[in-house]
View 1 (cartoon, one colour):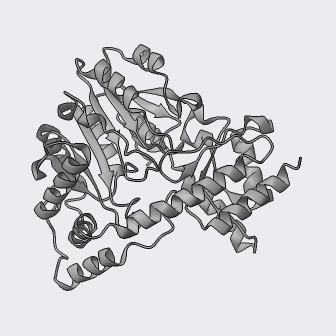
View 2: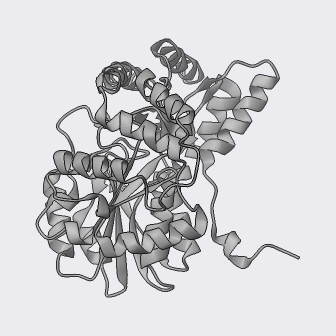
Length: 386
């Protein structure tokens, strides 16, 4: 017996592989500063935890509706309407365990073998993994450092064909921290409005921005009916382990997602949905304080990286990742990432973990204490003396 051929089309997520290597070094007594994992280093806000505990005490431990708890879906729709200027109802929402199921469901539900899917590169590796799993053709569009890690729109336009079925956008972006400018989104919407194309807009970091709130392409004229918004609770509410996310889309797409949901998960855990309701409708002070701290770390860490010979790091506009250009070191991304881990005790990711156009870059998560981040800068600097 052997695994089905389709399993070979799935890729791994390198962050977890690097974490295993780092833990192995720690088991040998070596000290490692962790900048590889993309999760907030803050606790879930207390009122959310209490809501989850109360839900368990109150008996929210049984199956729930496949599409999600109606009260939570209404709250999500209200939140999306307020933050994106749209007019959804709970019928447009599918609640799922984490953000990845929406990627799976969108691609499996809308893309046929041989179709083409445009996606950002470097980008979250699960995009390409799922495109290949669906036997579609991945069409990577390089993100351009000089444009704030947005698309070259000429390359984007040339990449559109009659086989293009889906376009994946991510803003703010993992791994670069870049935000797609509003004018770029308007041009993309103009190119797509008359095409039979659906947009998967990954907005999981949309509230993790250091300037003006990013524009959602769904807010532009004619785009709501052809856009799936992916969002969730993991990042802004430090709820990565709660596994709670959602998709917002036209009802005909949600109907398909519900079918995939009932065939894969039955439903999302009921008590976590009560915690999610408390997150959306309760105080937002913890989230705001977290972003103030992330900005403080971003400013100090990026400034530090820019003092290291061979490093050039743009200031990210969102998320909690720094994506320095390391071409000046003369080392490949993978070789340098290994050097930092094994010689410097700093765990980060090679830019190539996010696609071929990530060569020449590293990704650091600054979801760590400021003291640790500054120590990481000094450890790297010692490997590259003046």
